[in-house]
Amino acid sequence: MLEGNFIAADSTSKRYSDDKLDLIGIAIQFDNYDIFKKHYIKTKKDICKEYSLDIPYHVIKFQDLQKRAPSYNLSEILGHLVKELLKNSSIKEIHACKTFWTEKFTSPRKDKKEFSGIDFADKILSQYYTLVVTWRMYKTEDRTTMYPYHPKKVLIDDFTGDLTECWKFVGKQYELSIVPHGDITYPPISLCDLLASCIRIEGIIDKKEIYNFLKENSFKDTYVTSEFVGCDNPDAKAIIPKLPYPMRTENHYPHPIIFIYKGKLDKQYQHRIENSVFFRKVLEYAENLRGCATFFDEELHTKILKSNDLFICIDDKSKEDIEEILFLNGKSDIGILSTEEFLRKEDFL
Image (cartoon, one colour):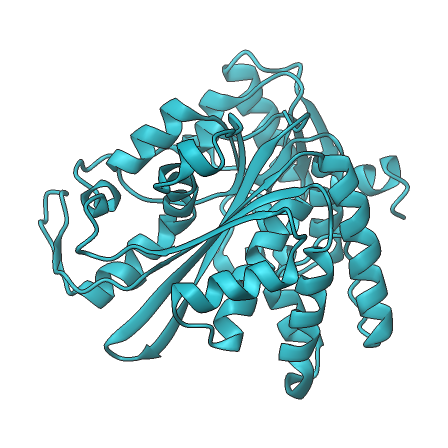
């Protein structure tokens, strides 16, 4: 999947006040995954050493820095890391997109719930803005004349939302790999998250300032575009949900999928796992296989199971449940490990 050119993308948001919120998306084209991964791991290690940060993971997102870096130095560390990561020849193109929404929105679902412009941006559009910037990277006006080549492969962070025209366009245009926890699994998605967060933290507001920032800190021949997409954009209607059906991103998860299972997880327990070194080791293992990792949801995931997937069960009861689920669905050939078996198998203990 990651041979040759591909696009990675992620997004964030910045709330200025009760009535102003910006969405910021970054999409980057790479031409060599392995070269960038090597550069990423070395750069992250060097920056952590320089600033005495203890972050025991290969791939990080902005929140990792936020939790571990001194607050008085966070902006400097983030900026330094992003600027060093951008200094890599495998980065061929960067597109930045910002949106501030003012129009009211009425849900296409049965309840026909109405949202103010800012609530639509905050509660709905922000959930799939990564998709929007991926779509806009292709739709830039000078695509065919200034930089006509465009890859077919996309590696982006997972998102949620109902069907939109931009989803239909992206789904037909690209070979999609949508990754749960993508910003802490794959280095290219991580860079998109860190870069979007850097723009947000630095308060770089308009598209010209963003363009100048990207141009100044990337290689000379890196193609850079920046735009603002608001309600008055001719294409704006393509990002508004029109049908009350979910996009079903799980159908585009890259396999093998490493499923973590512990019956019905309450949010507190899942949060504990997500903040553990064990969870990051699972993500690292999945990335090495060019797959992904997520918590198993019987309703969502049973239909997408493949023989090369793997289950990691938190306790004996979870293992019994999974054995039954796999048997009932004719998938008994899928491997099952306990957390200890997984860690020992991968020499993490």
